[in-house]
Length: 265
Ligand SMILES: Nc1ncnc2c1ncn2[C@@H]1O[C@H](COP(=O)(O)OP(=O)(O)O)[C@@H](O)[C@H]1O
Ligand SMILES: [Mg+2]
View 1 (spheres, rainbow, N blue to C red):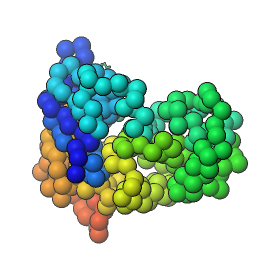
View 2 (view 1 turned 180 degrees about the horizontal axis):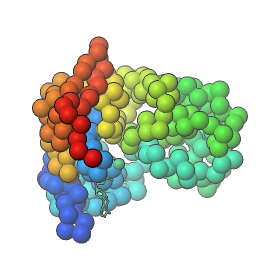
View 3 (view 1 turned 30 degrees about the horizontal axis):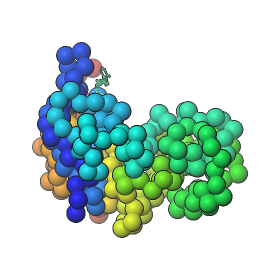
View 4 (view 1 turned 30 degrees about the vertical axis):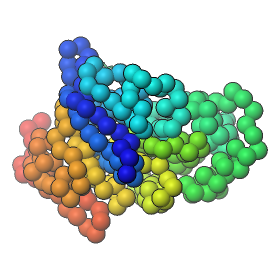
């Protein structure tokens, strides 16, 4: 198995504050990881570094075998699919879902060259795979949040990325929409030809079975990393979130709750 990501003592400093602080991490090409941490722990910053949208203040970043500083980041980004909740707001309300998916081929918003018939065929296949074939005739603006998110995943997959980065894709989804989306991720992650995935979340319930490993951040530092059975303990999570936490497990799903007296407000 190749390494898809190697971070070596990576720091990202802004206004003399280390938003990421000497993070080292190795992710294999067949692995699916969850990046877990509270609000402001540095998760999105880490993802932006991986896709070359931010540059580390120190340390070395190697993604898909390309060492930053010696590679064309625009080319690298074509091999990375990105789904962030912020993207959703940027599409024209009347855009057709198929055009939205196809636009991912250019890794840009909108279509700047005429798409080919085969692009639409592929977009249709992906829509079926993500369970959104029934919404292909509706304008983007009328879709539910869950439908929009699944479309954005299809869009991120249209150029066959080696790495799929999902930044809180379940944010704002109701229970059914969330479970539907997570099921799509399980199917995608079980496909040997599918991309390696990184799922960012702060909810343990979203760590579905295909995600075997967890990188846990706190204040920009890596507090723990490795198999989820090792990382998702009350001790480690209590330390990460700064409160006593209990961890439950039902089958192959986890959840967490806060223990002890109410914190002073
Ligand atoms: N460019 C920046 N300049 C200054 N502070 C930043 C910058 N980017 C992020 N931050 C701060 O760094 C912290 C981590 O942000 P972020 O990576 O978005 O956290 P998360 O995704 O885990 O919620 C936050 O406190 C945020 O306000
Ligand atoms: Mg974030």
